[in-house]
Image 1 (cartoon, one colour):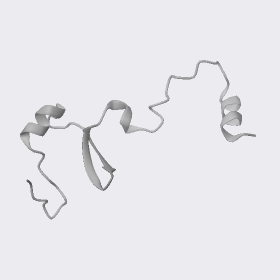
Image 2: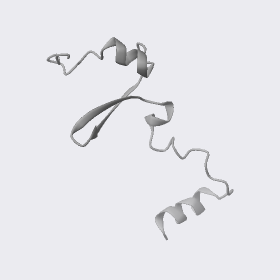
Image 3: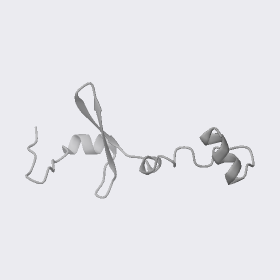
Length: 73
C-alpha cells in the first residue's frame, strides 16, 4: 500500500515497476476500468491520438481528398 502526497503523487512499488519495465523517465498511462485504476507502461504511440494511424494510409490521396473523405462532403 502507498500513500498519496499533497501533490497527488504516489510511489509505484518496486515489484510492479520491474514487472512493467518502468525506469525513471518512463511514460505511464492510467486507465479507469470498472471503477479501478489500471497502470500501464505507455508506448510511444500513446502520446498522440494521430500516432496510432500515422503511416496506415495505402492510397496516395491529396490532403483535400482526405479531408473530403473524413468530413463526408
